Amino acid sequence: MSSLEQTLSIIKPDAVERNLIEEIKQEFKKNNFTILKEKKIKLEKQEAEKFYKVHQTKPFYNDLCSYLSSGPIVVMVLESENAVLKNRELMGATDPTKAEEGTLRKKFGISIDKNSVHGSDSLENARIEIDFFFKD
Ligand code: ADP
Ligand code: MG
Image (cartoon, rainbow, N blue to C red; front, side, top):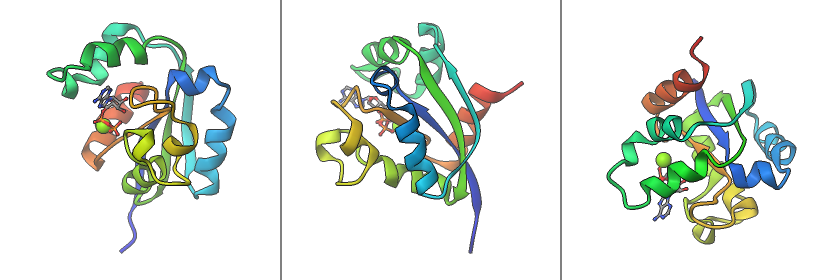
């Protein structure tokens, strides 16, 4: 059965800083995602803390939120069949050293924290994350 889904993608500060926005967007288009919405923003640390609230008990939470708010990011709504899972596959493992060949994190990621992209991990979280950035 086909299911057209939307998921939230973020190009993180390390990738924006290295001018990889267009290259990463091309990867999404090449893999049959439609970029429905897109904006370049810079988060306040408090906003990053809200976005990553599910990780608030993790030892890396503070660094993670400082990092996500350290520079401009690009947030996008991607649409395709099975977008949530397809995007997770395209991104690869959280740790770029463990990501498979051809994945975005393998290609562009620097380290487990500077891993270039975020993608929603479930349809429910995709809705929450899309609302977080694009609710008007
Ligand atoms: P993913 O981004 O693959 O969904 P998680 O949701 O588990 O991964 O973690 C969110 C983000 O937190 C990761 O993308 C990564 O940047 C950071 N992170 C995860 N685990 C660690 C860790 N052990 N040390 C430092 N940063 C981490
Ligand atoms: Mg996650």
